[in-house]
Amino acid sequence: MASDDEFLQATLPALDLVHNLARRFGHERADAEDLVQDTYLRAWQAWTNGNRPQQVEAWLATICLNLGRDRLRRASKRLEVVGDPPREPAAEVDVAAAAIGRVERARVERALWTLSEEQRIAIALVDIVGFTAAEVATITGSPRGTVLARVHRGRKALARLVGEEARRHEP
Amino acid sequence: MSHEPEVAATVYLAGTLEAAEREQFEEHLLACEECWREVQLAHRGRALAESLREVAPQRLRERVRVAVAAASRSERRRRRRPMVAAAVAATVVAVVAAAVLANQRPTDQPRVIEAAVASYRAGGLQGAPLPAVRPPAARLGDLHWQGAERGRLAGLEVVAHDYRDSAGRRVILLVADRSFPEAIGARHPAGVQTWTAEVDEVVLLCAERPSPSLLLGTDQEVVLAAAARLGLH
Image (tube, rainbow over all chains, first blue to last red; front, side, top):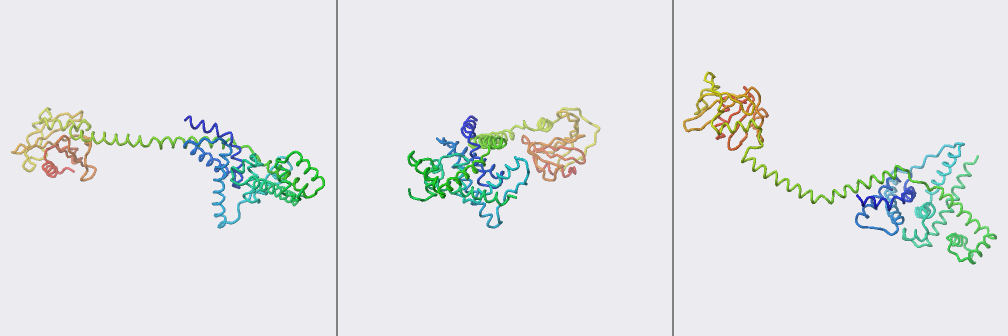
C-alpha cells in the first residue's frame, strides 16, 4: 500500500533517534525494541487517521516518551511487589580495548539510571538524541529554563557518578 | 556578576549569551574554581551521555517494517468488513434460494438417487423382468409383491421389487450389491447405517442390512412400516 511506504519513508530515518530514546525506558534491549515497535504502530495509527506532522522527529519522540513513561509507571508498580530492578550484568574486565569500552559504557548506563526520570529524559533528548532545549521544551511541555537546568544537573551527576565508580574500580 | 555557579554555567552552556556576556563569563571562569568545576563537570557529563548513542540494529528496522505492513493489512481488512458483510448476506440469500430450488428439483442429488426417484415416478426401471426371483416378502401389510426386475441406476446394478395395494399405493424396494449414496438432506433417525429423505415428493429410506436397500414411496408411514416388515436396519 502506498500509504505504508509514505509513512516509512517519512519516519524510518528517525529510527536511531527513537531507538536511543526507547533505550532510556528499560534495562533490557528487548523492552526497548518493543517500545520502538509500539511507537511506530501508534504513529502509523495516527498517520492513517490523516495526521501529517511538520516535525516528524519531535512527533515520534513525543509518542515514544508518552508510551515509555506509561511503561515506567506500570513497571514501578510491579517492582513495588517484586523488588529491585534488574541491573545490567557487570561486564567482565578484559584487556581488549573493546571490552574496556563496554565496561565504560555499562558504567555510564548504570549512572544514567540513577538520575531522576526527568533528568534522564532531558539528557536523552538533548545529549543522546540531539534535540535543542527549545525543542525539548515543546516535546515535554516544560519551560526551556527547566529543561536547561535538568540537563545541566543531569550532566554533572553523570560525570560525578561515573568518576566515583571508576575510582572505586581502580587497582 | 551575581555568583550562582550552577545558574551561570547553565546559561553559559546553553549558548544563548550575547558575545560580550560570554566573554565576561569566560574571564570569570579562569578565576572562579566553583564555576570552572560546574562547566568542567557538565562537559564531561555531556561527553559521557553522547557516548551512549547507538545505531538501531538492522533487525529492528525490519521488525518495524513488518509490524507496519501487518497493521496496514489489518486496517484494510477492517475497512473492507462492511463490504464482506454484504457479500456474506448475498451468499446466504443465494444458498437459501438454492435450497428452496433444490426442494423442487433434485438436481443436486447423487445421480443414483436422482435415477431411483425418476424410475419410481416412471413406474419402474424399464429393465429386464426377473420371473424366477423370490420376493423378500410376499406382502408388506396391504402391499402385495407384484414382481421384480433387474436394471441399472446411473451405473449401479439393482434389483427392483414392486409392491402395491388395492388403492394403487406403491412402494419400490431397490436392492444392490453395494451401498447407495446418501441423499442430500438425509436424516439419520436410527443411526448412521440408515437414512431417510424426501426428494421430489418421493420418500426414501435406505438401509445397509440385510443387504444395501433403498425403499421408495409417497407415504412416509407406509414406507416406514414396509421397512420394519422387511427388517431393514
